[in-house]
Length: 112
Length: 439
Image 1 (tube, rainbow over the protein chains, first blue to last red):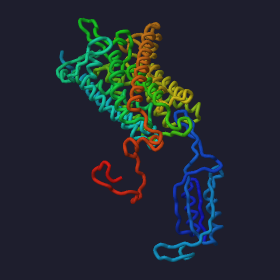
Image 2 (image 1 turned 90 degrees about the vertical axis):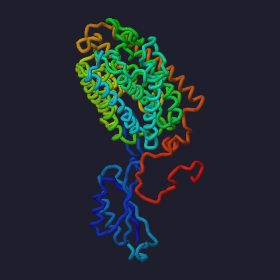
Image 3 (image 1 turned 30 degrees about the vertical axis):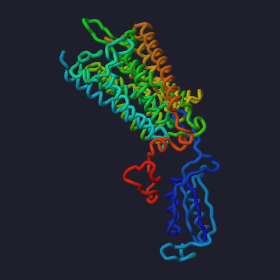
């Protein structure tokens, strides 16, 4: 079992969500995030004063999936989220020890 | 003398219009500060309504508009009750009830005091600001209003009892000097006494809501029609040209500011448009009753350009004039007052004058400059003394920790926005506050 965490541009959420649904994944957790990578934020100008805003808005998607689904999903997410411009985001994969479905108490891959 | 119901109705209505400018200013200023200090910013405007209204009834109107010396009206502590059946004209063509005029001018005093608060965003003790509002209104605004706005009485064709600057030939239709230069330079003095905010010139201090700024500027603009056209003190041809001039200068101010932004910063901004409107409206305030509509377009556009450049000066001089009292109100007020010396024509207002461009020579320009310098010098010195007195006695600034946490919470125990939809993030304590009780 793996946890896929994808940090993407907010306006790409709908595309990525559709791509994930196409892959047959039935659930996800989405949260607002802010941060920066190599692009180091952006600049805004108010009454002539220029500010560098380090923390730019991002969306964080978290998915718990079976090992066999990981490669296919990563391809789909990358395809959907990519704009080829700086700041497109990052995806990382984490191995999970266990997963529990709260309603039934099931453990392991059956709880995904 | 009998009153003319049309004139009286317009002055009464204008008082209501101008009062709306203060809540409008609260929104304009409130949107420009960070989310942690928007309530404090708005309350500094709202408490000005209370402080100035009380002073006005007790002695303010009397000091500003009572006919005494050229420098200050007489001190009648009896309040406004004596004026119930009195009429006044104060430069208007027809008399209106003195209380309609008193209400109208009260709203000027309120918004002028409230304007000053923009220089000290995020960092003032509310009690100190309240004391400042009372002292500044009494010591600075009331005398200056008397010098500029008290146009005296006409008896047998001769004007007597004018304020000193009005008598000296200053033309200031609705307050370029008494309101804009006065509040603008007072803001600079106050910002110098209080010192810059924590993080000034280091941290980004982005306006937290441009939409609030735009709502605020809409209300200000609407109220400004009363401010300027109401100053004709009658529903007449002069009020009509003033109304149109006000509109044109505000519109041109937006254009001037946005052109500078497009050229200098690459993109026109929402805050720039709102600021440009105010710059144009500020500049036309003194000039609106003396110049043509075409000249008003020029005055407004130049004001937008000048202010768009002037707002950067505070970073160079390291003075945290937080919401640009100098860049917008002082610069716009000075420009608009001097512009009368260029553009004024008796074709618009026979009681006005002729400026440089209308064959009047430089005489009027000189009178205008003297008026600006007098108000600038008096306001800067008196404001500095008042602010230092308050700072030495009760303290003007909140502690550094409180400023970092946010003045809304530390001074008012309130936060402006509750955007969290989750429950269970706190609990109800009591239907009434129990001092020293549960915390």
